[in-house]
Image (tube, helix red, strand yellow):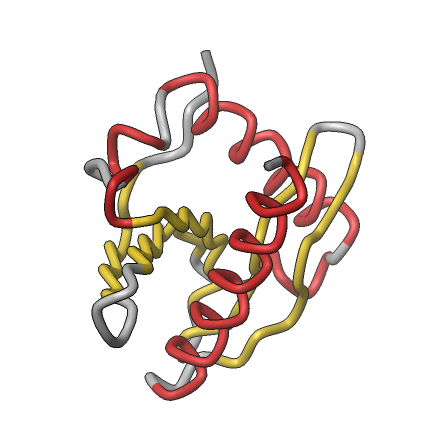
Length: 125
């Protein structure tokens, strides 16, 4: 089951990357890891550096993606983004935001993709 979930997650991240690239985003990093945690995708959208959390679900597991990225997860994503910005000084010159891409994979056709731009503000507490 864990392998199935990991595979579903990788599949969702691949779909999200393709979706964002079609919108004109330039993906800079996939699965950025540091001591604070992981960010699924880091991309440029025009001048914005975008930290993207991808949530992939099966239809029977589908839930509101904003609720899936709760306060502790938002805090972890904020800290991880701070590590990235400290490691990449050129990125500090750009405005930053957090997006969420929710993907629901059902056996009934194409996956449904829900993209929430500027989904939340950085969380520092």
